[in-house]
Amino acid sequence: MKIEELISEAEIKERVKDCGKRISKMYEGKPLLLIGTLKGSFMFLADLSREITVPARIDFITAKSYRDGKNRSELEIKIDDSISFSDYDVIIVEDIVDTGHTLNAVTKLIREKNPRSLYVIALVNKPSGREIEYTPDECLFEVGDEFVVGYGLDMDEFGRNLPFIGAVH
Image (cartoon, rainbow, N blue to C red; front, side):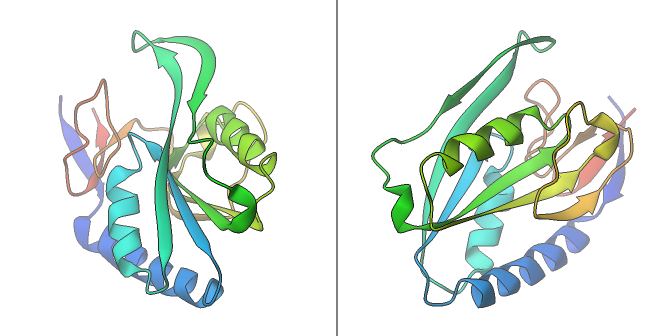
């Protein structure tokens, strides 16, 4: 597997730092809950949370829509139902918006739990992969039709550990 660097580690760090500053201003004095979608968002959420200066609760959800690496199946979402979402301004932290199916379902599920507000931030936007109409509130980067790995993004569970985002060739 050959990987061509598209977005450098330095670019990622700079955008994440700026995003953390914006979030800190937007949510100053508000009860903030950051929800990362596993597994892909773990690096982004970890780095972003360290850049946010206001107190924030952090949790994760699991959203799986692919089994056996290729076959699309029912979307399975696991969420901590003990959280009182109505007590928080919620930010969903996602690694990539590709088809739109996963974030659409996750957003719908969390809206049903009546958070004070809901904001969706994606590290990477891949509009060429959209199968349904879905636009997150904020995306840090946009990629073309290439398959990307790194900084949490994977190909069959490999490549997550790369400090940059690259296209697989």
